[in-house]
Image 1 (cartoon, rainbow, N blue to C red):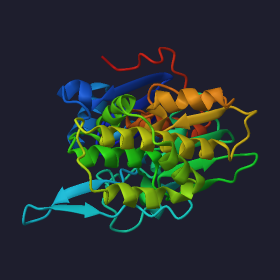
Image 2 (cartoon, rainbow, N blue to C red):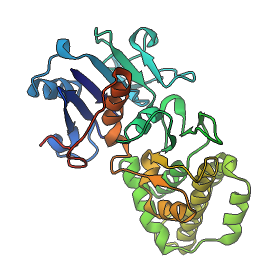
Image 3 (cartoon, rainbow, N blue to C red):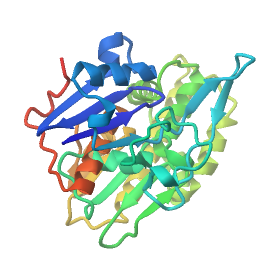
Length: 325
């Protein structure tokens, strides 16, 4: 049996395949030599062909909703398409993909075709997660502009949140500084800079007391802040350190909605923040975090979703050294 997971992300495009009991993975960045590169559509098909896989041989495709999909119009300007509307669903089948939705694989005639919510795909990218497990998926944005998905079988219901994420707060700090590049890299640089300032405890307490639902207001406060956003300005470095501390408390509040006694699968780009992870672990939460929690693991999430649908245990014997080359 052949199952195919496709992740045509705005960055870090990747492909996962299960063919006759063997797992294969490829990431376009490796071939292009460009960090976080987005693949052209033909790369996916060329890679499948190099693995001797034709579309007619595939039992099922799963494709993660990109939520940032662009193409040029006749006047050569970029148009942004609305994401597929997941109204509470975690995936859509081919016949339920909305008319006019412009995914580059929407032409597929294969009837076994699934379009997955971005965050749900992050959840399934955990190599040992089961559908009933507790999980927090948190990044700067996903399908339908959702920021976070909480999956819980004990104290918390299944739900999305649209509140500005802690990662988005850090990205805004980098944006005010004029730092360029992929969101992951910008946030990573802010993670480094936070060590050079001192947290303003009054500021931290003010926003922590408002709770995570105050994140939207904090975002606007940062956005409208009139300050020299430079590494040469100690006051700005203190702002970075303070917001970093506030962001940790907001993440901790997410975990406090779940049962501490049960393992929590943690994924999405914010799960790369080792500073926050260490503090959350010290609070007694049992976290499971894998190297590919960012978008580079989404095709694996697609593939494992198909494994659950078709009753196949996707085993990866050489994890984490799975790149095809």
